Amino acid sequence: MRVALFVTCLVDQLWPSVGTATVRVLERAGCEVLFDERQTCCGQPAFNSGYRDEARTVARAFLEVYGRDDAEALVLPSGSCAAMVHHMAELFDESDPWHARAKAVAARTHELGAFLVNVLGVDDVGATFAGRVTWHDACHGLRDLGIREEPRRLLAKVRGIEFVEASSAESCCGFGGTFSVKYPAISVAMLDQKLQALELDEVDTIVSGDVSCLMQIGGRLARRKSPIRTLHLAELLASER
Image (tube, rainbow, N blue to C red; front, side):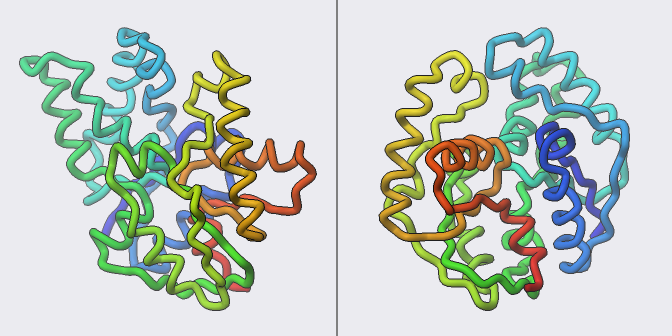
């Protein structure tokens, strides 16, 4: 299958290893990965902050890139950005041609884990990872896209892993994009509550499908001088150690 990859802003600017890991995983699953260097942002920060005109401008640029390619699917290593693509049509009136283009792109847009399991029918990508691992359900992936079992199926097939289902798996990390900037005290309080529960589970690695959540969790773990580390799903699935 020919797959277009949208790496997202945070991966591109702050965590590029997630992008390269995503390519390795997709190729291992038998995909031909296409990468268009014109890609920028999905428009989510502006959309979620209420700046619809600005979000509309970014959305048009996104649709210019992905509305004209010949890929069978568009894959993102982020439930958050994938959810934004599925909401993109809301920026345009139904009579606007951009609305139809947004709906068409959304119909073939998938978060990485959900794409592997639900579209390709793959839950074993040949990964090996030694560690006591838990999963964090990012809000957009879980509550907007309904992604829950897919990453757990993928983790279950990783050789050498010891998976722990955390009691706080579905608890928000407090990031919420601009929420953590506008309400830092509430954001940190939400995260600390989650981390206290995770530390009781005695895991050594927290895995998730969104870099934004992992940066929020990882930053607070570092401040707490915790030995627990964070890892993106793509990085774990690409691991062969």
